[in-house]
Each structure stands twice: as structure tokens, then as C-alpha cells.
Amino acid sequence: MALRTPVQQLAAHVRSVLGDGPFHLPGGWTHMGAVICDASFHARRKYKSTIRPRLVQLQSAWPDAATVRGFQAHLATESLAVAMNFKSPSRVATAHGITDLLAARGVDTRDDLHAWLEHRDNRIALRAVKGVGEKTVDYIGNLVGRSQVAVDVHLRAFAADAGVVGLHYEELQAVYEEAAAVLGHEAGGLEHAVWRFKSKSV
Image (cartoon, rainbow, N blue to C red; front, side, top):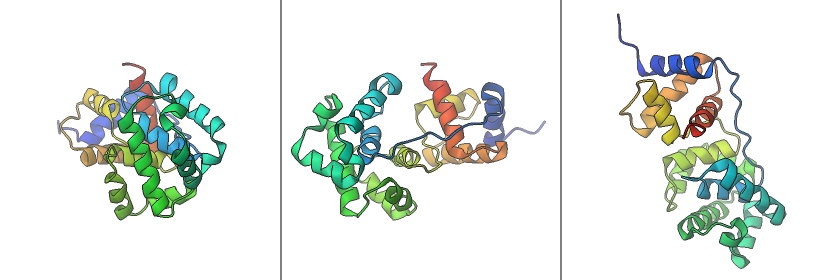
């Protein structure tokens, strides 16, 4: 019997564990302050109980931070650590760095960022912000309505359960994208379904 490819292994595991879907894309945010803070603060934290309520509160407290310029204006005069009720200087600094980069590049709205991320040079520029890696760039894409696979510990664990191990970020991302295509799903929808499944098991 021929050995199955990583794509076939992952696709079979998706069918076995998650069924046939449909797998819906994550909703993301239209409020750019929430987009930036979600990307900056969510890593290694319980999203549903810790991060999401703070993002909802931020939108209520800073409604005019729905644009990057509006968010930047708040950051100039108010404490993001206080607004987010989150004591992490490094994550606050990442949020400031993302904001300053986007403002300098003329990116102001969700639609602006959605289009801006289409270009490789812009994605590279975003990764130059301290605290932003490959996964964060792809995660930001999903937050503004792109359909991408942001490979994190949950997606790696799910792939390992399928017998797919030892791949670099872009290699595993490609396996997920190809498996999604084989199964007839949006890449971002499959990613979100896997993330929700594994995040509940840890």
C-alpha cells in the first residue's frame, strides 16, 4: 500500500474528527483598535474568557478608535495597559509598533489593511515589528476578513495527531491549505475549526 501524503493524512483526520463542516470563517473585527490589540495580546492567553471581553470593552470605551488614526490618537494620551486591563509592557509595545507602522503606511481601516496585506513587502514590514511573527501576520489577515491559515500550537498539535510532524511554518501552512482545498473548505474556515476544537482540549 502506498504511503499517504501529509495532505491526505491531514484531510482524513479532519473528516474523522471534525466531520464535513461547514466550517465558517472567523468574524474578526471592524474596529481597528480591536484588531491591533487582538493580534498583540492574544498569544498564550485564554481567548474567550481573557481576551475577547477586553476587546469588547475597548470598543465601547474607545469607539473612535475604529480607525488606526483614531486608535493612535488615544495611544498618544491614554494608557493601553489600563484600557485593556492587561499588564504586559511587551504586548503594549507591540500594539504601539503595529499602530505606528500602519499609520505611517496610510492604512486606516479594515478594508485598507485587508488590501495592504496582499503585498509581500508589506507583510515583511509588519514582521519587522517586535513581537510580530509569521503566525501573527496571518492571524491579522483573518481578523480583517482574509482566509488564511495561522499556524499555532493548536494547529501543530492537530497535525501531529494526524501523523504530520516536523514541518516548518510555511510547509505546514501549505498542507493545511491543500487539505482545505481537497475537502472543499475555505482555508481560514478549516483553520478556525481546528483551533476551536484543540483550544477546548487544553
